Length: 187
Image (cartoon, rainbow, N blue to C red; front, side, top):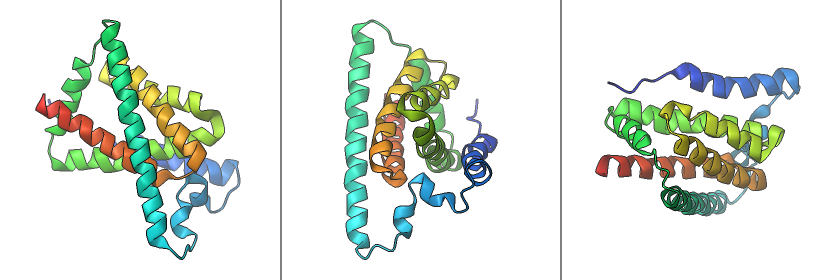
């Protein structure tokens, strides 16, 4: 069975916030509303800005890894582990070919960060946006994945709410998923 791409999901995750801001909130240039404006501010020291974002991405990634470890230990301690379903889907994605893998790693992760963090966090908060992020992972067929995605979504939402920078969130999410995919194919 090949891993399926559904670009309509990603188009909706990106287009809905833009249209909402334009037509509901009446904002004409919404890019600054999504934590992407830092690159457009005309800061003199681009290297310093990039270094700050790299450090922030590292903090987010290490926070995600620490929380994932704690979740894994908690699930193991409770004797609750349905993560085989997640490993199966992850392994299928990891071996689905470069175009599919690149699509999910670049487009899907950006769409998720754009919608769940940059759009939803300022409007409905960390808890609600993270719960919706968890629910969006129902396709894995794993309760542990839904809970894990919600909790890790809360980590990402926390950093977005405090920093209002989308790029470090995207980089951390990308690297986290890359680590998970590498683990899935090596287990």
